[in-house]
Image (cartoon, rainbow, N blue to C red; front, side, top):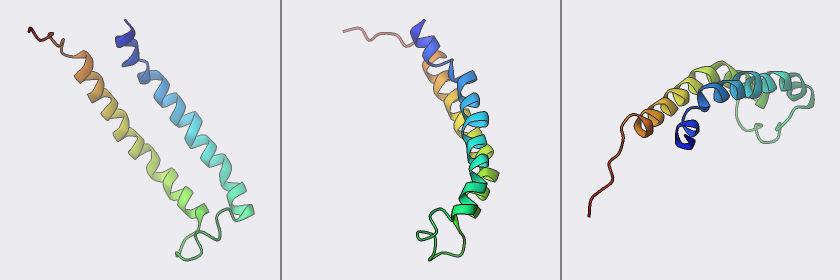
Length: 89
């Protein structure tokens, strides 16, 4: 039961952590990033700033996240799909 729960709870918990969690927080941080010029010194040598970087990241985040989510299903299938027989000595 523990093994099954370990490889099944992500189906609900992972999307809840991403959409209302990470993506919403990054979106809410955009005005603060723009107002304070966060990481302005670090991004001064390249043609875009941190604000633009986070905006582009927010555009691609769902697609990148979905690839990781599908990978978790693949891992789940490999662990729960086949019953591994114990090796006989």
